[in-house]
Amino acid sequence: MGNVTSFKSNTRGNSDEWQMRVDLAAAFRLAADMNWHEAVANHFSLAISADGKKFLMNPKWMHFSRIRASDLLLLDADDPSVMKGPNAPDETAWCIHGAMHQGSPQARCVLHLHPAYSTAIASLADPEIKAIDQNTARFFNRVAYDMGYEGMANSLEEGRRLSAVMGNQSTMMMGNHGVLVTGASVAEAFDRMYYLERACQTLVLAYSTGQKLNVLPAQVAEQTAQDWEAYSDSSYSHFAEMKKVLDAKDPSYAE
Image 1: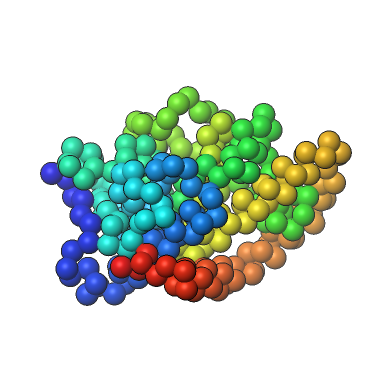
Image 2 (image 1 turned 120 degrees about the vertical axis):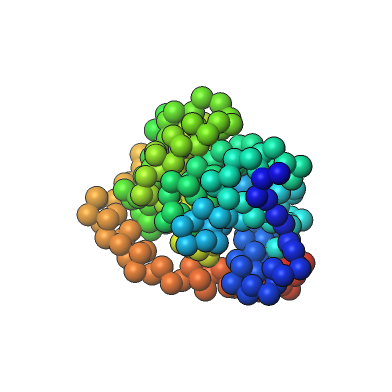
């Protein structure tokens, strides 16, 4: 059997790993609350080793609203035999996240979703996130666009292709599919996903008026994107506040 484990008695003794589990579990619950999830599909992962190859990920076909820190699988991107074990993760999850953690060590946290507004924009012939306001400008020249969808990502070759398309970006619009967002931490990835969906909601609503978009000049969009980067510490406060909301509603994610 491959290298796959869930919670063991000594995991809580490793405070760093346990906190990572708690944060990732919180992200699943919050994604469900915000209706970003899709049935028992979609997947999040978080690297826990220095090289990024050992990572946490959700169990196969478990609803986001029920995931707890102790439910998360611990996987090794260099160990494909995991897919032969009784606790094997979802095949598409392994192909996408295994490739990302193997080839992109800077992508510590990887969120793959099919949220309504960002998926709608990703499904357009022109999926570019036009800089029409402060939120959309956050993504100016900072998004990878994958237009090569050929079906479900159920092969290692497809995972490697997606990793190559992603390159050094932190956001990917997956044409005819969904989105993929990465970050140095769960807080950064969650905040990026939050603003991506907000940006795409604004863009969908603006398109729906039938009027011409008032796109920001490139220099203004770039300055706004840089301002967002200087404001990046807010992502940690945002995530901390959202965990407090979860704590008041249902703290079982941290079990």
